[in-house]
Image (tube, rainbow, N blue to C red; front, top):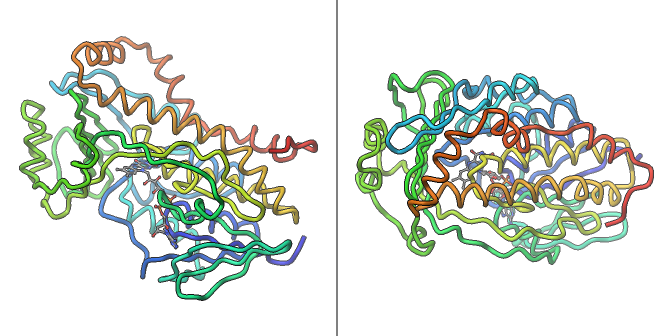
Length: 400
Ligand SMILES: Cc1cc2nc3c(=O)[nH]c(=O)nc-3n(C[C@H](O)[C@H](O)[C@H](O)COP(=O)(O)OP(=O)(O)OC[C@H]3O[C@@H](n4cnc5c(N)ncnc54)[C@H](O)[C@@H]3O)c2cc1C
């Protein structure tokens, strides 16, 4: 095995930072490149489900320790827009089984937790990657300022509009979901919001989530069906958002109106067709660059952490980096495809606006036995490290 092989990583989002953690853990040198002039974690929150921490822990022995930075989910409710409780999801039971928590956290704190884990690492800012050139023994990454960097492998963790994905030549077309998302963090307290509390309210073509992220901070998000071109241009205030939820429980109006309009982020919901190829020679994709998804399962960041753990695992103890990247893609694609499709399917159901479909949806989840709910959740929340280890160590590896 060569001494200290080098990975060039484009992007310093959750995916890029996690990849650097995983690669440093196996003795690689990781060089991160970011087009912006610093690290950015926009002012909202997210959930990092137990599968992500499980992947890092079981494959690489890394404890991400996220619950020290956010709030571990204790009570996850789905409610009808009238306030009626439709279901409690057994998140804690599943976390206990895996021995890793589901954590709700601000993006800033998640970034901080990953940087703390990473320690000293060279991050080059204002470096916009444009393409690469591969030679038999290395890869050259080119930037728009005319400079370049050289390494043993290149990881495109450059998000939804990945330039590395384009350079590989893989097709992935944007699919607009037809709704808007608002996201915000606010210092807020209410008797309903106990430690580790998550509630999602479902209505007609609209939903809203209210989530404790610890230290008195609450993350909320809302959605409403809207043509994507309108969602992209939408410029309303907190009052305008509250009007979408007239007749919904008071806490919803209260939290929206307690949030400064300027701190509310607006996003048009979209994903992409699943790219058939992530890997070419010494180059591969990770996180949203590989598998952008709708947010319904709350797994985009989680899957990028899983990607990083598997990448570290397949690359350890081998000097055949090209073969290892093929294994990474082979192992990750079925799992990512399943979650991308499941997120899209759940998003359609959650955004139903037809009365008949909504009644079917709401009564369906209300009557669903806990065993069935658990089976559905297990598909995304359980990370199968044994399958990854078995496939990685397989002597006869199926060629892509
Ligand atoms: C509304 C919303 C809610 C979400 N909620 C959740 C949730 O609850 N749980 C969850 O797990 N996920 C959630 N996600 C998804 C999650 O945010 C993403 O999947 C995750 O952040 C992707 O991380 P990434 O590192 O792959 O990409 P990004 O975070 O997009 O990072 C890419 C980085 O690459 C940089 N970059 C891009 N191009 C270049 C270039 N050419 N050269 C150099 N640098 C470049 C960018 O500046 C950026 O820093 C949500 C997403 C949205 C939109």
